[in-house]
Image (tube, rainbow, N blue to C red; front, top):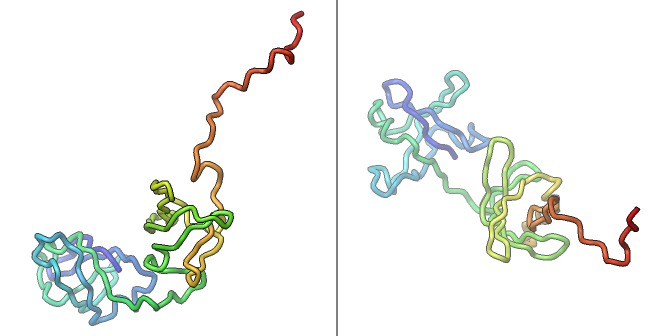
Amino acid sequence: MGRLLKAHGLKGAIKVELYTDEPDRRFAKGSVFSLQVPASHAWHGKSITLRELRWYNESPVAFFEGVDDRSAAEGLIKAILWVEQATAELPVEDDAWYDHQLVGLSALRDGVKIGIVAQVVHLPAQDLLGIKTLAGDEVLVPFVKAIVPSVDLAAGTLVVTPPAGLFEELPDEDEAPAAQPAGDAEPAS
C-alpha cells in the first residue's frame, strides 16, 4: 500500500509514498499493515496499526501506534506497507487489475502463447508487464491498450500486439544489400 519515506517532526510521524488509488479506504484509522523490512530489522515479521493519516503540503504523513517519537519513526524508514486482501476482490474501475491477478497469465500473440506474465513494474509514466518468454528471456511490455488490447482473467490470458522488434531481433539497417546475380549487372559505360 505504501513505503515509509522519512520522519516528519518529533512525535513519530512518517511521510508515506502511497501505492494505492484509495488512500481514504486503505489508510483509515485502525488499518493494520504488515511490514516488509530486512530479516535483521527489529520490526521484521511484525505489523503496525495506523492511528491517523494527515496531509501536509499535499504529502501524506502517517502516525502509527507504538511509534511515538522521531527516533522510533526513523527506525521504520524504507519499510514497505502491505495489507491482506481477498484474492477475489476486484478493482472498482473497468480495465483495472491488481498485480496478483496479472502475474501468471499466459501472453498470446496472434493466438499463440509466447510467454507468461512474471511481474508488473510500476513506473511514473506507465506500467510495464515483465513477460517471461518460452525461450526464457524476460521482455518488458508497456501495459497500454495499443499493445495489450485485452485481458481475460477467466481464461487466464492476455493478448499482446507488440511493435516489431519487441520480442524478436530486427535486421540491422546498416547491413549491405544482397549482391545482384552476375546476369543482372548493369553494363559498363
